[in-house]
Image 1 (cartoon, rainbow, N blue to C red):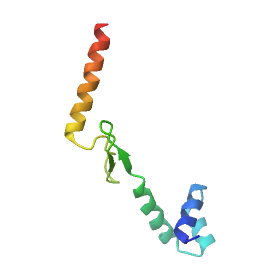
Image 2: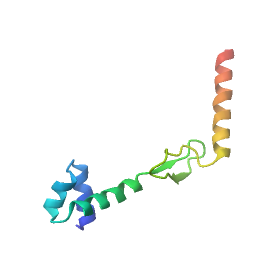
Image 3: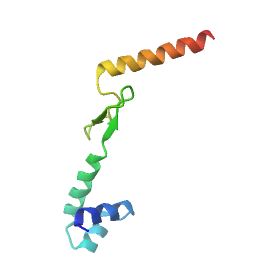
Length: 88
């Protein structure tokens, strides 16, 4: 098992950077860097409208739609559904 997978496994168990670093004889800064690299991979989501897989930028709000067209289509579908429910 390589260090990256071991770090990810220990992090999922709830270990902190210092504890992982001590166990693997590494610097805490190195552990923090590797953990942040894995956190960026988790920013993959899917579009609410077309289910296209997309990545979000870490420091920004997570994307919900892949494009403006998908966003408009989704909102129009929702709006039509709400109008039908109000008239019944």
